[in-house]
Length: 121
Image (tube, rainbow, N blue to C red):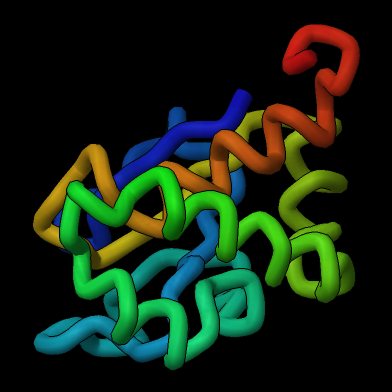
């Protein structure tokens, strides 16, 4: 199971393995207070793509398309997530205010497609 949680939400035991999937460390969060297994900077969109998208919902589909290309070109960045998801619950930690249009949502979709290619067409 792959879950999503904002970085400012309290961690719980049902989160499983927690991974920060942001290129930049979230503002106002102490590294010692964020309970994560690993910070996967490289699983986040490139700085160029992040700046282009700028969390504009009108760009969402194109953002996802471009982001998936980046992910396919760098499988080492997200394979730890896939491995962890095969063994239990994984929670992708993100900092965006928009809970529907952010890189963690897109990354979750990408990972589910990798885990279940037969059901994603």
